[in-house]
Image (cartoon, rainbow, N blue to C red; front, side, top):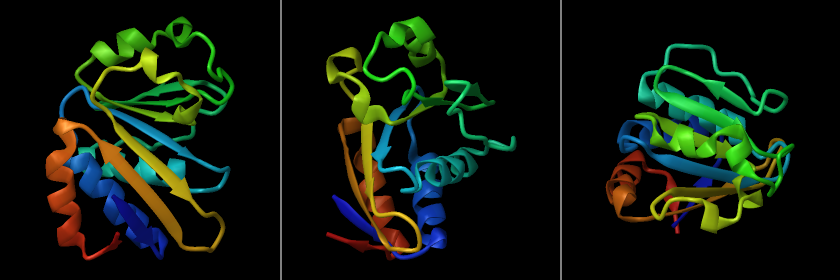
Length: 152
């Protein structure tokens, strides 16, 4: 599914719906160019999850832990051994795990069911967001239809 985001408000709406519909122990893989809005989307997902803490980019810390989610940035880890950062342990927690730059990860290192979100565009331009996921994410599609965002 593709969603067109014309504003930061659209990004926030999308993220809040994703957070509100995320299953327990969910994994969300975010990818897109620098400045595409991965961290902005993560902040909105956190809001949808009910996370009250201030969300900061984990670029230099690799992982930031919050009440209901873990936020990871694997840009500096690359496609290397994610188990060095304890990915398998994070995935066992009853939290939503969001991984920025997730396209650097070999899918064989991931569980079967996760949500993949690829964002195209940056700056003041509208964004195209490609969303795909397994069975756990089927209710997300019906919820997105209620937002009134342009979908393809």
